[in-house]
Amino acid sequence: MALLAESKPEIAPPVVAVVGKESAGKSQLISSLTRQSAYSANFRGSTLSCEIFEDPDGRTFVDTPGILRQSDSITTRLALNQLSTSDVVLLVLPATHAKDDLTELLPLVEGKFGAVVLTFWDRLPDRHQASSRERVESLACACGVQVIPVDARSVSAEQRQQILDALENPARFETGKMELCLSWRCLPRPTLLENRWLGPVLASLLLLGPAVAAVWLANQLAGLLDPRIQKLVAPLVAALAGLHSLPHEILAGPYGLITMGPLLLVWAAPTVALFSLGLGIYKASGLLDRISTAIHPLILRVGLTGRDVVRVVMGFGCNVPAVINTRACSSCSRPPTVAAIAFGSACSYQLSATLAVFAAAGRPGLALPYLLYLVATTLIYLRLTSPAAARSPLNVLVAGQNTFLTWPRWSSIWHEARLVLAHFFKTAVPVFLVISGVASLLSWLGVVPALARLLGPVMRVFGLPAEAALPVVMASIRKDGLLLFAQQDSLTGLSSAQILTGVYLAGVLLPCLVTALTIGREQSPRFTLKLMARQALAASVFAFALSWLARLW
Image (cartoon, rainbow, N blue to C red; front, top):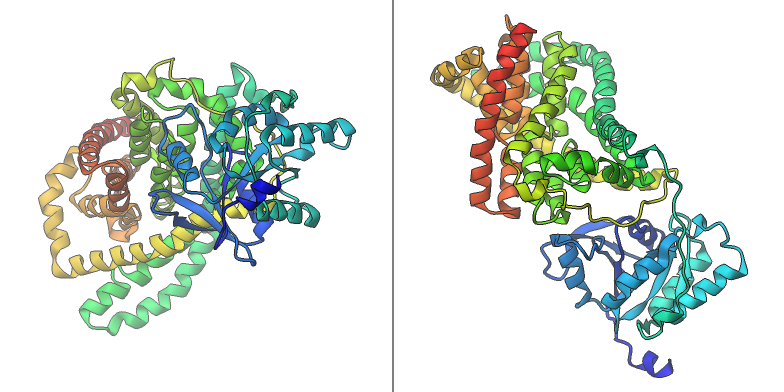
């Protein structure tokens, strides 16, 4: 061991690649070790954005994506490639089935220097007995490096120092003594999600839970705040009446910043916050992994796996990170997953703007039929457009063992939710203000009436007035552009069928510009153009059908 210690690599600055399967507790462990917040960066020229943590002593920890060796996903390939350039490796294994993961992952790190951390140690019923200590020694002997068992959510000062010391003087991973590794497995307690018949149904309900809860709660909160905000804004709008025509139009006109701005903050911000927190609870508790496994047999019929549908639900927070996360999809299911996000993931801005329009029209109850129709048409769209290979029963779900369910901690929930909230306030709010300014300028220049006259015949096909053209066009640039439907004159005289059809058409006709550019960067411009043309055709057909169905209803 002394010779190995002398030949270990010099690390300046020290960089530790943290590897393991998904849901092994890597992020929480690194956060406990560094006591610092993470930031995203492209690591060593990789196109994959990794979570980077730096501790006060100058160590850098790179949280690599979860490895699924059977998968051909981009994230797995990049995680494996990252190992070849890493200085030191920290291999993270769940203690509940350490032997299974070690058998699969140890060959990948053979010859590297590092250590092993066993997470979920608190889940072993006999962790305080001598037999468990013997198992740890057996694992250490099997892989040739130090093994430290911890509860990743509550790493003691002694355990933290033990891990840092092991990384400061790392040994070399070996596979020559794998036969010494004892059988070691502890399965989580089954739930109704594992039931063959009830599982998919329960998973579907739970999957839509954060979106439905966010919509309802935000609707209640905004209903209380909106009248008060409008009352505060009214004197300011009146005071700006004497401004020159263009400044007045931009600030207090029908599409003005002061006129439309409160709609975004009152209706959008609560929805974004509540949805991101709900999804954070699912992830931090391990429930999201159980849901993806349970819903797989059901969702496979439309060309997605259970893991893919989770990324589609992520799109209800923001489409951009959801599209980027499709890197973890297999090459077979990635195109339909991207298509599902572009078509049916009503991002927080779109969903909030939709609620604002329904509320401004005095018909908040339209939210439920809108969501039901959006989900139904998305499933039909996927069934018609996904390749047969993606819908094959042979397309099994590539995943590890079921994760243990645990009470989530606020720090873990916030870690998951803060990225969505940051993206909303840094990106969505400024872009919406730009859209309002552009719409005001177009209105002042007389472009709005001209656009309405040009697209008026097209709108009449869907039973909509010519004035609906502007929100439809602006929503194709940015989804919260459909808030222009909430401008008072736009809603005058419209029926519930027209409002529902107009909002649906504006929401799904095309992916927003930012989403389209992200898809083009992730896939190709040709793929994006083909997707947009196909989506526009499908959305037009569904919107036409909705206009007639809504009239009958």
